Image (cartoon, rainbow, N blue to C red; front, side, top):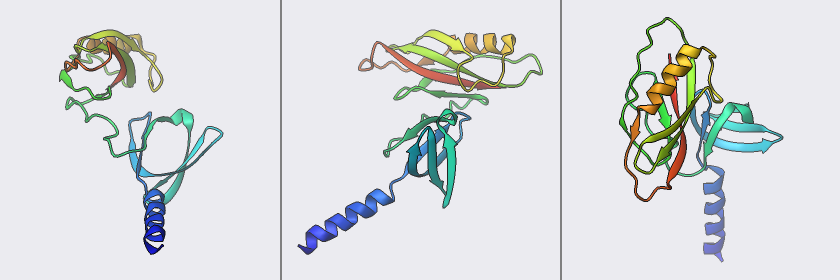
Length: 163
């Protein structure tokens, strides 16, 4: 009987201290505990403080021990999110203007790593400037991801450019 009670207590303690990763559309990642979700509002405990977010501010929530997102590509101003894939050829771009902003490009990648489609200006984009949108689209189309024979024929992801 004591073993059952101890197991139950440990199970409750483990669940109460579960770690989650909250990823905001701004790219910020927070490790903490999801407290509640109600009517499009999330309460998340981060470093002992309860913070409230609307679902429109959140890109994703990771509930297990997998990494929340791939590591940044290493090139300043470029990040990507394509689950289980690695970027093998960096997007090539050069902003020849003083224009600033964030451009999020939705990409469709085949199992061989080629970018089949690139749609700039999706949710999270902070600019409507045609030059930056076109520059980001062209750069995303030139990116290459690793070959993944076991992956679906096409995968959806994003590449974020910060200017």
